[in-house]
Length: 437
Image 1 (cartoon, rainbow, N blue to C red):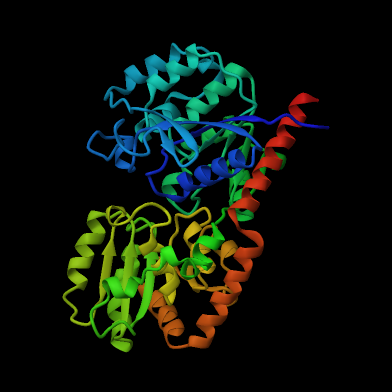
Image 2 (image 1 turned 90 degrees about the horizontal axis):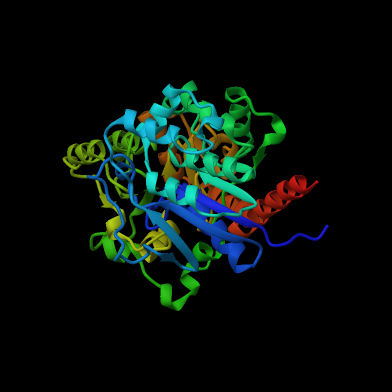
C-alpha cells in the first residue's frame, strides 16, 4: 500500500531552548522527518524553559520577542503561555466544560495531581476546541504532566490514535503513583526507550504488549565524533577552564540536572575519597543548578585538592555548544550515576566521543550500558562505589580506551537520530495503515 505523507501533532511539555532529553527527542525526530519530507509535523507546547515554570511564574519562560520563540531551526513552534491559576477547583470546572473531556473517564484525584504538575494551558485547549483540525496521529511527552491530557482530548475530538513517550522513571518512587499512572492507560500506544521500561509499563498499566513499542534514543554521531575535524568548531575545553600548568590533568564529566536523582550529589560526596588516591583530576559539571548541589559544592571546595568546574545552561549555546562537545571529547570518563533516566542521551554523546561511561545499576541504565564492555555500573547513591569505579578507569588507561571504543561502535551502528527517526516513522505508518483497514 502506498501512503500519503502523514500529518502528526506533537505536544511536548516544553521545547528548545529548554534542554533535556525529552525536549531533544521531539526536536530531532521532528526536524529529520520534516527535512526528509516523511511527515508534516505541527508542534504546540508551553512557554516554559525550566521545570519550575511549569507550575510557578517565578520559573524561567521564553518571551515572544526572544530568539527561538516562534522557530527553532527548520521547525515552527506554537507556544502558549502557562496559566498560573491557583484554584484547582476552577481548573477542574473548566475542564468539565470541554467537549469530550468526560469521555476520558479520569478520576478527580488523578486530575488534581496532574494539574498540580502543570503546565496548565487553557488557551491551548480552547484553541483546539474551536479549530478545525485533521491529524493522523497525536504524539505527546512526557509523563506525568498536563499536556498529556490535552493530547488525549484532541485524540477524542478527531478520533485518531494518541501516542505517549512517557520516559517512565520507574526507579523514582514519585513516578509510581497509581493515580498518575491512570493517565497512561488512556493512550492508544506508548513508546518505551528500553525493554526494561516496557516491562515496567506492562506491570503498572492495563495496556497490552502490542500497545507498547520500544524505540531507543539517539545522538547526532558526527557532531561529536568529527568535532575536531571541523576547523570552525575547534575549541579546547581544557585551555578555556583548566588552570595553567594543569592541562595534563584527567577530566571526569557530568552533564545533566545537578540533583539527587541524577546522581550529582553522590558524585560530590565521592570526591574526597577519589582525591585521597588521585590528585590530578578535574570534575566538570554541566547542567541546571540546584540549591542542594550548590551547597554541597561550597563544602567540597574547602578541600585544597578539589578541582571543580561548574557550568550551567547560561554558559552554553544550545545542545551542540562547542564548549560542551569539547568537554565530551576531552573527558576521560563520563559519569552520570542516575536513577531517573529512561535511557540517557548523554551516555550516547559520550560514546560518540570515544569516552567511557559510568552509570547506576538501576532503572533502564543496565540495558543501555553493558557492564565491563562499554562502561561500568555503580550502586545508586553509593559514594564509595562511585569513587572506586572512577579510580579504576583513571588508573587503567587501556580499560578506559577499550570501553570507550566499544561504546563508540555501538552508537554508530544502532543509535543515530536518523535511525531512531526512521523507526518512529515506520511505527507511525503501521498505526495509520491499521486505522485505514
